[in-house]
Image (cartoon, rainbow, N blue to C red; front, side, top):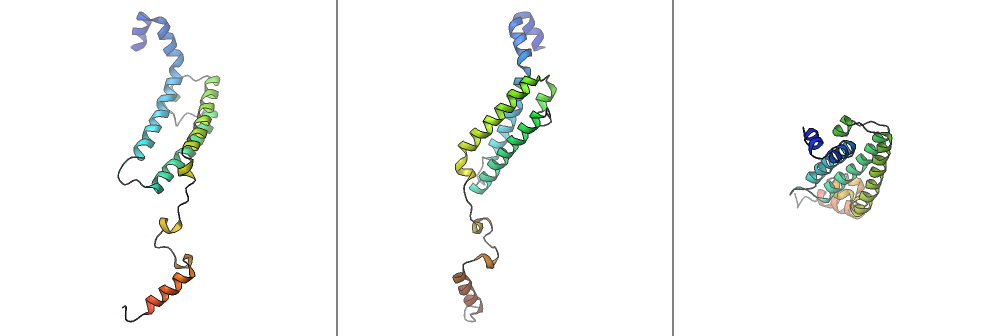
Length: 148
């Protein structure tokens, strides 16, 4: 319907739209993924641990998408799978995802390299991981009849 209208009004724009259809489909699918991650990174219950997990997962998914597109596997890109993608287009998408991965890794380096102490992740962890002095104090407290 849009193509028919453009064919009548502006044939050059119509031809460009047909030529750019795979690119538009690729960007539509990619921005859908960006929006999903953006929504995950919002909200009151978000903390640095969740942020790191979401960011690391998205970074790994970019690599997976790059690998799959390189193999002409478009299942992760539903709109792109409906478009007629040429081999040179696939190469452009692979290069774009590679640059995106590098840029994303650089921009979120502080979050991705952040060390989260085990006592934060699992505050009620095994006593064997505790400091020896703290173990002694805990034994003293746990056997003190006056405190019970």
